[in-house]
Image 1 (cartoon, rainbow, N blue to C red):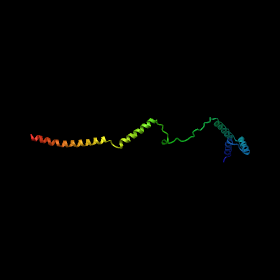
Image 2 (cartoon, rainbow, N blue to C red):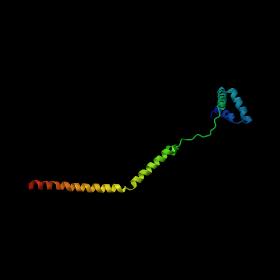
Image 3 (tube, rainbow, N blue to C red):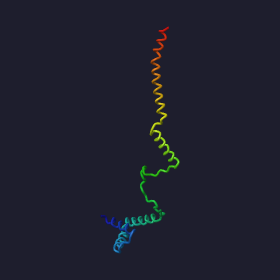
Image 4 (cartoon, helix red, strand yellow):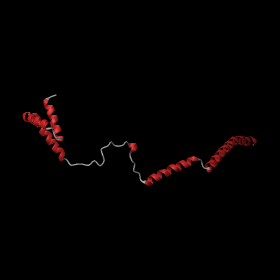
Length: 134
């Protein structure tokens, strides 16, 4: 590992916690001799100052992934929900059993159709008898 990399790690550690006396002395000697590490230390100190100057924002709601669409709350007005439920129940009740009047109507219609067929069958025969009888 490069010697400067070790000192740059020490510079980073130095920003968060105090170094031992021996580590601090080695770092001071190296920074006095190395321009790259001196620039790194100045940049790190400036960055730390910028970060500390940012306004603090509380995390009342920690960052989280948005919930999937099937788990999201849906806000519907109560009258709309009640009307929808009534429509569903009414539709279900009408299809539950047919009303007696519909049965009578269908029987009458079937009887009428049968009678009309009989009348149609009889008419040509009676018309033939009337014309041949004259």
